[in-house]
Image 1: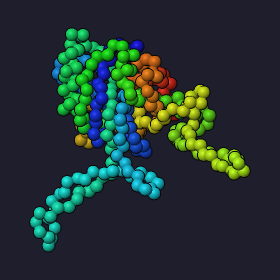
Image 2: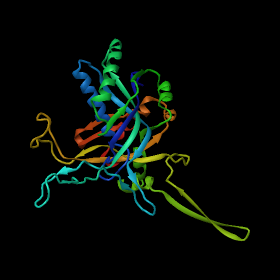
Image 3: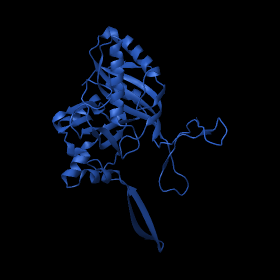
Image 4: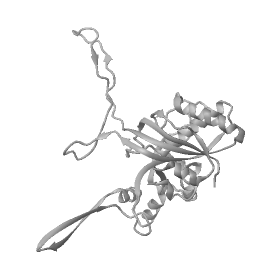
Length: 313
């Protein structure tokens, strides 16, 4: 159990990327959060701070998906941005004419999150300076999930996980529920059916009579996720990539020293839980896991790390 935790409280992010995978829109992918924290570590290392960030937990306090559903609409529509006009010269039209630029539909969200980071490789006397530099980077030198950071609370070191849980309330921690996918697939379902079965809302009706009048009652609920019929807040979440081509070099690649490959997103199930329900930091923290033999690049929680297979996504 880790005792070295950094709490980055109440980070407000605007216009974060909500297109977490090719077929899901909602909470940003776990790869975005671990990638941002890795970028923070690299920036700190460039400032002669030897700290290493080995795991991260995400707790969301507010989430506003930029979609709209009008009266009578069946589906939600993405709220786009009004980009500035561009000058365009056209024949037989006065100079200074302007047109609206091409519109690219993109899913965005505004959210407020707290991050819990497991760290090591730094002396106790250097922690305060590291926290100060970390705060400065967050306020002006980095993006989170493609969004702009509007504000952030003061980072602090947390040694007691029970104290950390109190500081994270009210909020919802994102935990991995790949075990639900595994159980459903062991019963014969494929990955997509297993996921949709837990995300679908099932509507059932029943009839009874009272005073000679027949009444119809409707019940809407999702599939149970607990052993005693409990139903959690289950969501699809992108947690990594699967390589679909051989490692090699690409034309004009950004890093000439690192092999590249084509990859596809991996999506599994996650669950939002209130922090007070977590027993230890490992129930909250996500880590990188690379399996070269299976071409997998994953973000996992330690409780599921030894069970990872491609069929779980």
